[in-house]
Amino acid sequence: MSLIQPSVVLDVHALSGAYFAPISLQLAAGEVVCLFGVSGSGKSQFLRAVVDLELHQGAVFLHGVEQQQMAAPSWRRKVAYLPAESGWWATRVGEHFATPPSADELASLGLDEAILTREVDGISSGERQRLGLLRLLVQRPQVILLDEPSANLDPESTLKMEQVVCAYVRETQAAAVWVSHDPLQRARIADRSMDMPLRESEVLV
Amino acid sequence: MNFIHLTAFDLGLAALLVVLLGGLIALSGLGLTRSLFVSSLRMTLQLLLIGVVLETLFRLNNPWLVALMGLVMLAIAGWEVVARQKRRLRGGWGYGIGLLAMALPAFTLTVLTLVALIGVQPWYTPQYAIPLLGMILGNTMTGIGLGFNRLTMGAASSRREIEAQLLLGYDMRQASRKLRQDSLHTAMVPTINMLTVAGLVSLPGMMTGQILAGTAPIEAVKYQILIMFLITSATGFGTMLAIELGTRRLFDERQRLRLDRLMEGK
Image 1 (cartoon, chains in turn blue, brown):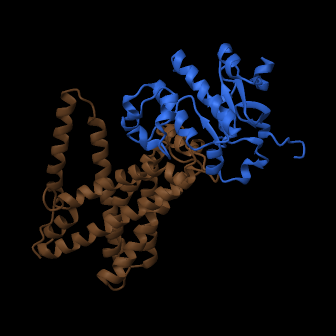
Image 2 (image 1 turned 180 degrees about the vertical axis):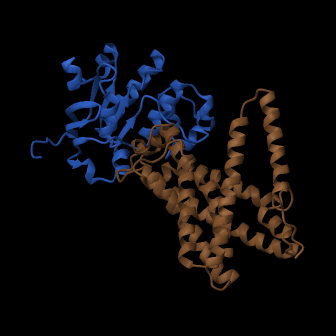
Image 3 (image 1 turned 180 degrees about the horizontal axis):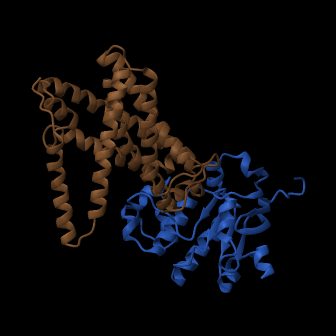
């Protein structure tokens, strides 16, 4: 792949699956790309294929290394995906963190340190979504794929989340894909926006 | 021998109790009468049939016939395990895993017991081999059926929790830990409860039967203890095997949760 420029973090090459049309996409270091498209166009399925949670064709390279050449768990730590609804398997919030987040990291998303000792059932969906992002960022991924992460957030928390993600991407020279239906949000955070390609069956209709 | 034979009249009187019960339920309009009668009739025919089969087996004392009988019992038990699965694995994996998980411990432990513990000559003597295998299979069937059902149902219902862990870079062993734990517990709890209440609340059927047939209680108790240990280990080993093989089938080499390998829920 001599065409790859050194600054390309993630190179998605003709990736396709059962529920989305083939996609090619390159993410440069420090770049945030917004993805949008009608529901049912397979945005989540596409992101799941990038982290190899879904069967797919095509190839994905992280800094020139193909997905299949890396063990799946280490790939997913480097290319991290935050689903629209994150899963919580233990009783307390703190048990879900590989390394506990600092008070500053929590505060940057408007959260208090005490939340780590609370039970998952007792916190709001907005808090869960911010904690989901944080538990992923403490693993220092090189690519973050965010599936409507601010859907349950108030405007103030939404702005905080945008700042945290953009700052992380710039500082670590990582890259992000952010699924967003809000044109104003895309204008605030996106270096580039991309419309989800339609599937063949939908083009014919 | 102080063994008292039962006559057809005795059994008829006992059956009359079920008929009375069925009549009472029918009168109160609560349903269930039909299936009560059908399954009572089935039980009678099945047991009479097995009585005839066992008489023949005991008389012929042929190892191949004993083996054939064991295989038939295994096949039926395997089918029962699958029938209890609400989301079974596609492509015969559900039946195959259930069958293997029962066959391996049940046959191994039965033969081991016959040869090394009871030491009956010849070891395949059907009077010992068939009831022993039957008791082990009957109990492992329940345990493995419960545990395997919990595994496949749980994989489907806790998909989000499992995938959340896979997404954070946990491998399938870590991500499925709680699921496997729940499955093993579900399978083993009835057996552990059985051990706990044995002799207190319930007098186990085999022991009761031996005592009724005139065996000294302490000798019957010894056999029962042996059977309890066999049932417990066969259920435990079988369930662990079923969970291990089932988990490997639920995930693939790229550590993806493969719910597409499960049939649609019934």
